Image (cartoon, rainbow, N blue to C red; front, side):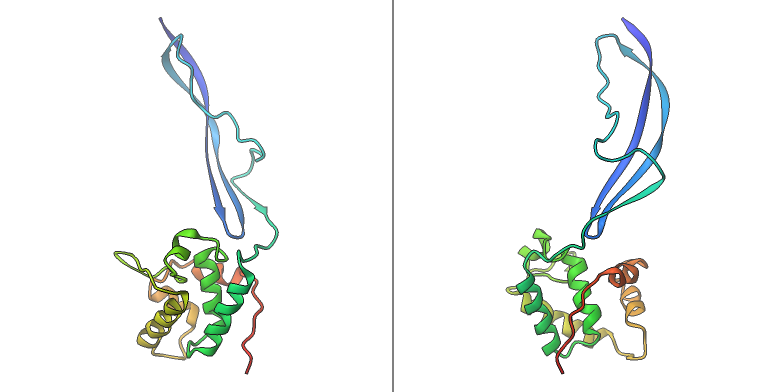
Length: 177
């Protein structure tokens, strides 16, 4: 037997990022559909723990910590000892790309910067990844007057939001002179 049913549908998307959880909520709407009387709709009516609400909500988390603070310090020391320019920005790239060294995919490839050529590159060590970055930077960053954040966008390292993401990272390491 067919029955006309009105079903409320909520479309939602939840993103988990290094600096928080972003909840995008699309308003509820009713739809009509014919279903067999013994069919049960398989729709999620709500998501527990997240308030249904505004168009964009941010649920702040405590500042993330590196999965291995000693490793992060070693990476930063290695960057400081290198000829890489804009070391303060480059370490933030490592943090962003690897999710504070928690991203298993890139970390398993020792690829601290998300370099790829058709597929993600694998390095024998994280040091090799930093060395690769140094060579990449020497090859492409030819005008030291160019804003480094804009350089990364121009080189399509990521999208136009990339500088804002990097600037939002709170990492206070400084290279010893």
